[in-house]
Amino acid sequence: MKLCEKLFQGIQFYRDLGRGAHALVRSAVDWNNKRKIAVKIYDKSELTEEEVGSIEREIEILMSIEHSNIIRLYEII
Image 1 (tube, rainbow, N blue to C red):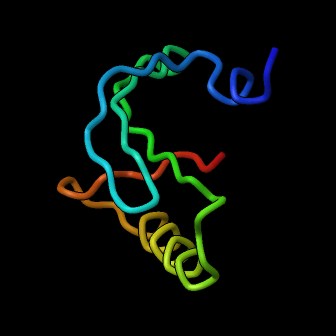
Image 2: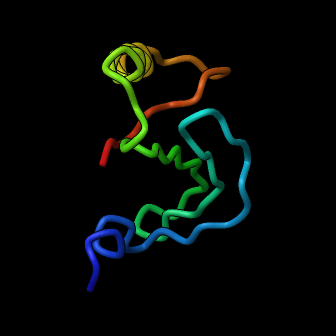
């Protein structure tokens, strides 16, 4: 089993929801928890140090927020 298959075991991907300069967001279902999710996938090979810092700040903010109109960050792989 490939590493990416182990990381995403139990997750079924569907359509692309959006694409940015270095990331793709896809809709999916996490069958382990039986919930609809969105998965943001970064191409780390093209990121600068500044962009990595920006992503780290985004993660910190999303982890600290609990609001019904803002997506919830559940897991970082």
